[in-house]
Amino acid sequence: MYSKDGENYFIVDAHVALWDARPENQLNIHGKQFIDCFYDYHRNLSPESELWPYEEYLYYGGERLMKDLFVEGYVDHAIFQPARLGAFYRTGFGQTEEAFALTRQHPDKLTYNHSWDPRYEQKGLDQLRRDAERFQLKGVKLYTAEWKGDSRGYKLDDPWTYRYLEACQELGINNVHVHKGPTIRPLDRDAFDVADVDKAATTFPEMNFVVEHCGLPRLEDFCWIATQEPNVHAGLAVAMPFIHSRPRYFAQIIGELLYWLDEDRIQFSSDYALWTPRWLIERFVDFQIPEDMTEYAPITLAQKKKILGLNAAAMYDIEVPAGLGVAEPAVA
Image (cartoon, rainbow, N blue to C red; front, side):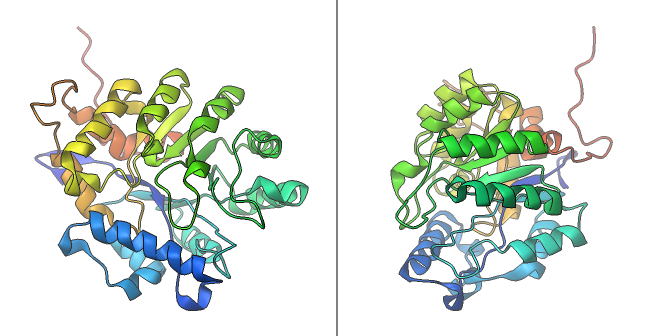
């Protein structure tokens, strides 16, 4: 929980990872390219005081994750959103067993979402059913630009993807997080295009599609889709650190999201360990739309509380302690 000026904020970090990008886990040059690109995002968008040494960034482990999120970072609950990247890393990028073990140790603090890839067809579909039971999945994280053999990505409206989404619906996995944001070397930019979200959201109206990174740099495309599809949500991973390096750009991002969507469909995330949550939360609570950006309304206290945690808590049935919700307006 974060407290400031007599107000308390329930915090859900809706997009965190536990990765291993050390040289011994890199399968090829692309594994190094990927983590180096991550580190460039971290280095270029972070305050100097928040920079990590490169070697630490390659692998930080569960103990540091727990400290950075829950001891120093104000976070009440966090949701793992893994990327496998099996073409680049020997044991995968996101560490399934280590992350899931932490979740079992701290079920009150952590939720584990798993990943799938429709290009594995029936074999993968059978694995999804086993994973759903083992991990008690409520959500999945999809990485549509991931490489597999000669394929350099897939789309949400591919026939096999629909079969996987149908299985998710049957299994009660109703929260689908999709990386649709800035490209990461060596992945292809177009494989992260947001257009396929539109079709999937229309076809599966009872499922939630959380577009991570809110489609950046395709914010306008994303907003036009989300305004007509009420089951499309915006994840603020990668958008959040612009609050430091480009505050007016961040004001534009959050202003557009609040205009086209509403405060109930926007979720905070630090994208840990790209960034740590503490400074992002502190700055967002203090942040306000610049007065000269008159096309956007000021951000209200209720909107900040919903974005920082209440929205994700509602989606994942995370219990919010009494007094930490948004006060209902008094009835005249």
